[in-house]
Length: 221
Ligand code: AMP
Image (cartoon, rainbow, N blue to C red):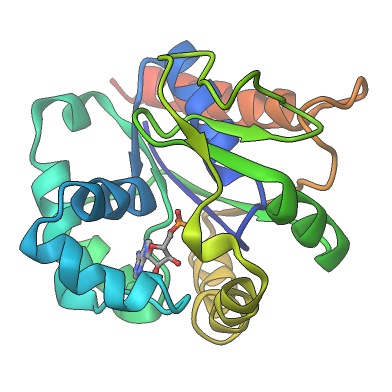
């Protein structure tokens, strides 16, 4: 099963991808996580990428496509994946088509209120990338509940940078919804409810879609 998650910053892509990959035995490929790893390790790619991420801009296509290709060539990507944060513009979407086929694109729709509320409270583990929120998914002593790593606020989640990221989302990434709609692979999901909400149903909606894809794949085999 090959799935793409698209949506604005803090629309829930990463949080849901991390939960669903376990149940469906898929690999979570987040280009944001790949870049943060390069930056942490202070590699040449990381140094170049930081120039852009720190300003809320997209990392140049050549860099991100190279990182993605390398990740997709690993053994664990062959069992199926959720691609989170790629593609983010038309060039990347076309490039992806030359690398792999895709079953469905899930578009996580959120209002501006939701985005602001989530981004200001979002925290992330420096070691494993697990996502937390000061109110909805709190942690004690900034310690990751999964791996014990340090939990911090991303540099690019400070207000000025967030503004730039949202503006780039509107101009570069949002047109992808129409592109995938025309290809007949898009599913829109209302992602305004939080993970901690008792009526929380986003995961169930995703599971229904995943189960349908799995059934179709099994019939075709
Ligand atoms: P994310 O964790 O997906 O919000 O990504 C964090 C940052 O990494 C983005 O604001 C971009 O600077 C960069 N980035 C992640 N994915 C891509 C991509 N597909 N193309 C260009 N830049 C990206």
